[in-house]
Length: 324
Image (cartoon, rainbow, N blue to C red; front, top):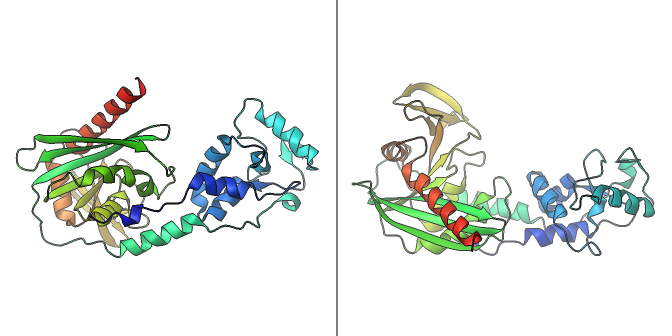
């Protein structure tokens, strides 16, 4: 199985601190500007997290990172805001009512950066061209649910394998390791799949994976289920609890209604016996029809049993490990 697409990932924490270290004395920048320098404005919330966890204040003066309106705050210590104000004033920055004065004059944006997220987006775009959504059914001997639970940056992956005919559990697989890549929206695969990859060689041929996330029903047409399918060369289905994009078309049938992006059907909303809907789409290697039928067949409550049980097992393993 090819795992190259989830290897050689950038150290986003180091990349962020390297950018903050470029902000000169007497200048400030914003969480959004650093996110853009990382390659995608969507990373602004992660930048805020990284700034709040900075331990090397001598090299990385995170006090120089402020909100987009020039407001001071968002740093780690309870008295951090007052400390930041005092230090910034020593650097020649005027602050009034908690905001940097003459903000535009003090705003630093001239970062030198390899823009790692832009490179990862290009990797996704390249991989997306390998997605296959066949029109005919494939042979499915087992269905495996995948879930990952976290304690800080420690990740606990669970894969629970069900027999496709009896719908009984065949086996439960677990793996744990550090999650080196942070959570950044639309880059989830780079956080979770390196841990899940540890279990893939233990699966039999004919296994279809169900992920707690999207397949092609995704703004980039490449959710975590699609990335996993291409990376592991296995049929995958995305089942998400929230809708990122898509417009309902046609009428509902047996609890399912087609969802289209740009006029093209990419998945379905599905509700089992009046529950809140879930959003089903093929990730790779399986047709839209068979993806929906598989999810419908394995759903007793709201969430399909494979991912529901995988979620339970991942959480049990996390609690067991953290309580030792």
